[in-house]
Image (cartoon, rainbow, N blue to C red; front, side):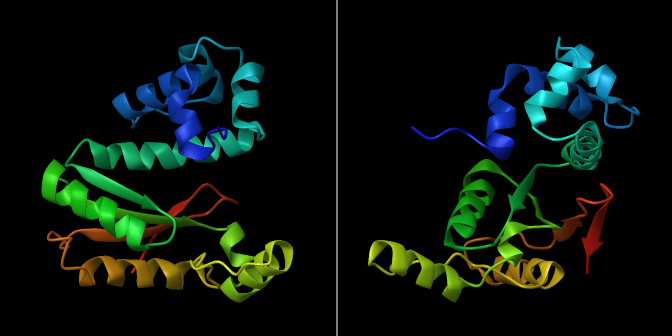
Length: 183
């Protein structure tokens, strides 16, 4: 069994989930790392270790969560993190057709690992190491904003995603913690 990472790991950690929940409940409050640690019943240092990054990055992630939490208070929103592929379209189709999602938010981030290689480079590396070429594509990209725009177009073009009036794309700037909309 593989270890959970990213949002899945955060949401499965009771302490981190407690902190994310209070941000969600009060997104306008100017949360500090110390206050979030207290809600998580941890020291500031123990809370920071859960993120495996420095406290400045925690603050940036907290600010991004705050922006997203504000959106959650208005209407059912489906968040797509990463490339829009067949799996993402399937999830969106289920969410809109069966669960009532009305808005879609696509988010990429700067300093993304997907910017560091091409699909061909990865396929060749895997073939060299295993003797088999993958049948799938990693969907690497060279332009974060361009991939957000392309993802929005894929979502809007899918016949299985009926409500596309409110599909928005953002880039989360890891360096500054800013979340900027891509038009």
